[in-house]
Amino acid sequence: MIDLKVIKKLEELISIERKLVITSHSNPDGDAIGSSLALFLLLRQLGHQVKLIIPNMYPGFLSWLPHINEVIVYENQVKEARALIDEADLIFCLDFNSMKRSGVMADDLIKADATKILIDHHPEPVAEEFDILISKVSISSTSQLIFELIITLGLEKYIDADVSSCLYVGIMTDTGSFSHAIYNSETFRSSAYLIDKGANAERIHRLIYDTFSENRLRLLGHAINNRMMVMEEYRTAIITLSRKDLKQFNYQIGDTEGVVNFPLSIASINMAVLLTEKKDHVRLSFRSKGRFSVNDFARRYFEGGGHQNAAGGNSQLSLKETVSRLIKLLPEIHEEINYQYDEQ
Ligand code: MN
Image 1 (cartoon, helix red, strand yellow):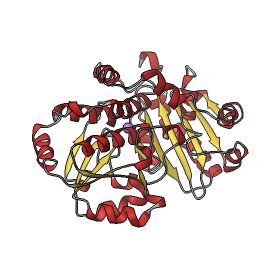
Image 2 (image 1 turned 90 degrees about the horizontal axis):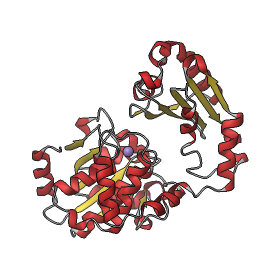
Image 3 (image 1 turned 90 degrees about the vertical axis):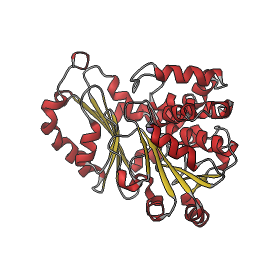
Image 4 (image 1 turned 180 degrees about the vertical axis):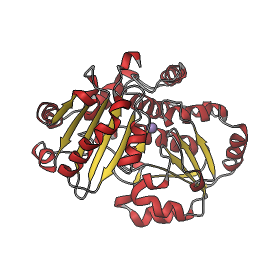
C-alpha cells in the first residue's frame, strides 16, 4: 500500500492546474517510457500543462507507442527542455532512484525549484534529492506502481486504451514477458485490468519483441556464438561487444537490448554480464538468477546499480581492461554465487 499521507499530499498538489514535467532515466527502457507516457496522458486529461522530457532517445521498438512523438529528448532540445524544467511547478521522476541516473539532465533537475516527486521501484532511493517519495521495491515495475497509484487516487476512469497500452508495455518488458520480478498475483491482476481497458496483449508483444532487423538477430547470434565466455566454476557467462562488432552489424539503439538474458538460460549459470564498448566508456549489464545480487555487485565495483537480479554499470577502463577486471573479481564472489538455482 502507498502511504495515505503521501496520497493526500499528491492529491493536493494536482488539485489545481499546474505546469508539470515528467522525466525518467537515461537510455530509457519499456518501463521508463511506458510509465512516463501513461502518467503524461493521464495528467493531461486532468487539465494540467504536462511535458515529458527524457535524457536521450528511446529505442526503436517503442516508437509505435501512443503520443510518443510528443516526448522531448533533452539531448536534442537542451534549451527548450531547460526552460521547461525551470518553469515547472512539479517534476515527476519515474523509474530511477537517484538524479544521477538521468544523465545529462541531472544537474538541471537538482537545481530546479519545483516539488520533486519520485515514483520508482529500485532499491535504496536517494531520499534527500526528492520532496515526495513513492518507492516500492517489491513490485514488478514502475508501470505497475503508477497503475496502483491511479487506482488509489480514484482516477481509474482516465485509464483509456492509450494509458492501458503504455502501462502494459512497462509491466511486460520489466518482467521479461511475465517471467521474473513477479512478487505476487497483483502483476497479473493489473495486467488483466489493462487488457480489459484496451491494451491488446498479443499486438503489444509482437510490436515489442518481433521487430528485429536482420542485422539485430545476426548480432545476437554473433554475440552468443563468438563473443560469449562461459565460466562454469563461477557460474558466470560474459559477453563482450566491441565498437567494431557493433559496426559490423550496423548497430542501432536498442539492438543489444535483451542480449544479456540469453546466457542465463544455461542451467548452471547464475550471473550473466554484457559489456558493450561505447565511445568513451564501457557499459555493463548484469543479470542473475536467485539470491546473488547484481545490484550490490554493480554498486560495489562498477559505479552502477539497479535491482537484485538486473543491474547496470559503467567502466572508464578499456573494454579489454574491464573484462580482465571483471574476471579478477569472480574469485571474490565464488562462495556467494555458487548455488544451485532450484535449491537455493
Ligand atoms: Mn523499471
